[in-house]
Length: 389
Image 1: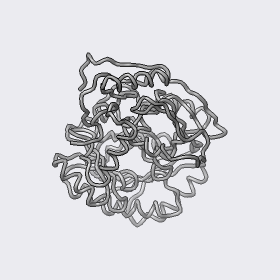
Image 2: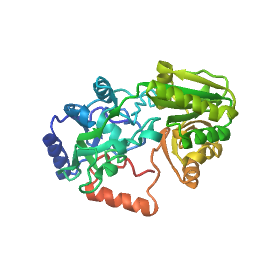
Image 3: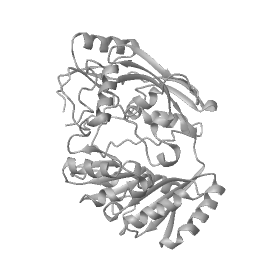
Image 4: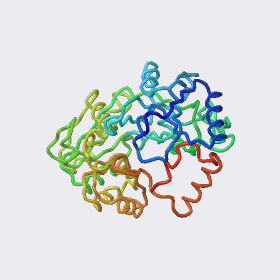
């Protein structure tokens, strides 16, 4: 928890951001970079001398619905952007999560914060991650220098793909001041098929069959008994869910075909319209685990074998992304959780209950250190945030 006496700086222009970071570097001071502040409690960070908030960098720079692009300053709230594009029949296809209840956080997530953390919702398996919708940006490095990359077109092949580097850097490399993203047409209809009573392994087989078929599934999740008992389903047995989106007739036809392909897995029910949207909103926000006092882990794993991660660790799980994302409540030691995830070819991030990131190790750790030194040689921005214990 930060000392309330620490000064909060709220620049209203990229030039002011440059001045703040340059001054911090000259004085050997450390700065925490925040957007809406909703992920501040995630993991630990070394002591800082000031907080740099992007709250006043909140202007929509350009929105071209016909070009499927939107440019905004980093402090614009995700909720405001979603309302803006929804009015034009469009959406942020990577379905950015809030996690406010999950992390007991105040404030509203911002566009810059979501991209800096590379956070994506259930549609990731079809639409891609947040980084795949990140077309360009302007930012200020830890050297106090303004720079930019990418552009305002969907296809841009000039220069290095620094968007992939900034996405998931958690504000440790630069302060994003302006970003350009791709938007997509919103589906006219959606429906969700629900399968009941499947064990985790069997549910994985059902999700794999659906995702590998010609059904254009846009989300696939499995809720074991503990998660299924929570809202909105309050089911008495495990639930496996598969979402279809698009035009009404297409959704109906694909739902019928998917029903036929999966009938061997047992009972199937359907959610449609608002009920389907509410269900996936709850999955996106991991509402089943909100308020639980146990440490919470986010395991990124190979989808077909994702169930093996939680099965090697006592606790309660919820699976998204067709099994590629496993949410896990467990009291097991951090080293064991990270080792199990790594053994399956994945990695683990702890959202509650201790250090979020694992220690830098091996060639990847050395590369991460070199990248940090290139963008922020004095370690001014979010010091220690991604270095692990």
